[in-house]
Image (tube, rainbow, N blue to C red; front, side, top):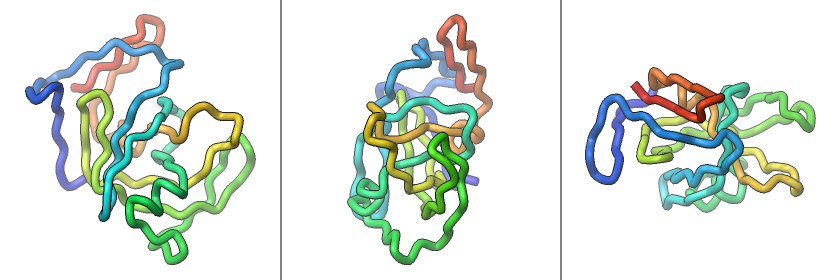
Length: 140
């Protein structure tokens, strides 16, 4: 469970927070590690359990993937992969942020136009209402 959770939109705190989204768009997601932070394109994937980031980003953030604290087999559209699992210091998207988010380090196939997946390891710490037809996500 994350050790700290906060909602932030343009420097102001709101609760609840309602945002209009298009489920097919990419989100600019800020991820922070021990040495640095990065902003990467992600898509929302409610069918998966862990946030995913590319291995190169994890290395740049200061994680050692050669001696990860945890490895896990994950089922992906490309098959089963054995991926290093890390804990990101923070993840922020659309002004909503949380700390201590577990993430899998997986490189997306070259044909993908996004670098990672924003998944349940981030969303599950919020009470979230997703309304796909109207394009609304609400963080309660």
